[in-house]
Image (spheres, rainbow, N blue to C red):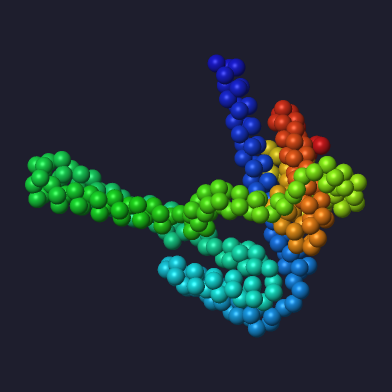
Length: 315
């Protein structure tokens, strides 16, 4: 029993560590992607149409105002979102910026708080139970039985609406889009972004060029070194502190995993290098660095998980 209890405690601690690491990693990836998109907006905007940009800004402000007024209908948001996207695209700024800015407006406050839900849910539950009881007592096919069944379904629908009202709209949007993004958007992006004709000459050229070596070193070594250094500096200067149950070895693993640059890195490579040869060399370096970063990150996190005594204050 004692051994089982110790095992459960160890597994519980590792589960907490995993959740903490996953949260930090998700936050890192989101911020990294946003920074990459900002680079695209600043560095790859050739000409700027001020009128179209003003239209996009006005539509964006209108969406912000609609959120403050708590408009529930999705139609105004869809129409204004299309105007924001179109204005951004016509202005010359890369349209991915519009997607990021629209994502920032996703409402995170539920329409019904948990306290209000608790206050209001008991009455429909009582009505539902009464309707179920009436349906049981009525004869099959009787008018009273049909009416009780309709009341039961009506109360169930009301309870379902109340439950959905407690969900954060942004979280519900993520759940709705996640299958499409995971199984449609990302595979299509991967197929369109990776324009590599693998050959021995390409591998040799990439390995011997400053371009290929620079991209590989930046992702495989620069990312973990920069992430670890910035985190150490922030903790040392007391600007931040490591979450509980997160060690420096885990920080190293997260930094290594951030070197996986299969989306924004390939996107920037296609924008930065107009000629096919350099684009292929950069894309190949991104793919190799992503594989190395994944292996290094997995090994670092495995090393960290095997050290229960590793505390956040020690490297």
